[in-house]
Image (cartoon, rainbow, N blue to C red; front, side, top):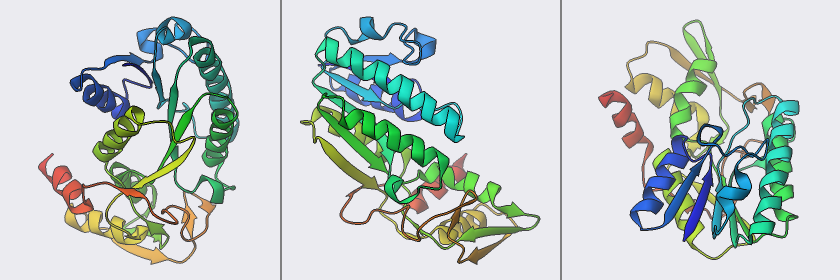
Length: 250
């Protein structure tokens, strides 16, 4: 199959491209750097000619609401319109677990816009909602630090390794369109504060993690379980302890 990956040179996209290429598929890694720009439309029609599957992993350059909504609206409409013309059989997009429950988080609003455009496009699709990445835990720890303390909420958390995300994206891209949502998550579930505490201690940081019940995530108040799957989800294989080991090796 010919598979076009928008955002194909990023952390997830480059890994998905590698996995699908190893299986013998023709893979086009699309990004502005490779001459494929979904915001301007440059190179999109040419890239989609003869494509069977499009995987959209592109991300907004900013997390503020106006910029993110504008990005996903413009890029989504340009891409899906071109897919209809090209006769693409399956559109796969990576979204986020809990977008329906976090109306006060600007970026989640933008992802909701993206999902709506996909559902209404007429192109067969699969939306993959992922929990937060294990690789993002260090940023949470750093962003929550106040002097020698790290204040983190006890919201439910089930982070997934980027490697597992890439595996699932490649898997769903080769399956029939779900015309719905598939959720993916890591194998370990606990409070966000617990994951951060483990990371801080295991990496030798002297800061003290202070759990709280404010249910905050980067300044926004969210439901306690918003960041974790509600029901059954496809679970990755890489445990958080393995992520910690990889950090220590580096």
